[in-house]
Image (cartoon, rainbow, N blue to C red; front, side, top):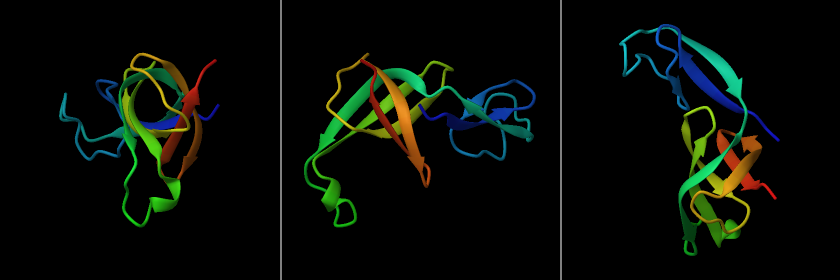
Length: 104
């Protein structure tokens, strides 16, 4: 399993997937980079069958919103078809593209 990188507000501990300059909760500007467990549940998903030329070699593929156990939501590719609330884990992170697979 691969961990997921997050940026945690030094003041209120709110976690973000993307780097932030100001916390949307407390307006603090200091963040700590952390790695968290990459397990979570599928919140929503869609199957991409027609894609841009950049991703055409991957079609068809599934993109999902994953609610991580740490309270952060991440958009990721999933290696197989999934259902809402299905348990998944992060298996790869290349150039900030997270890839998840089902936990059996």
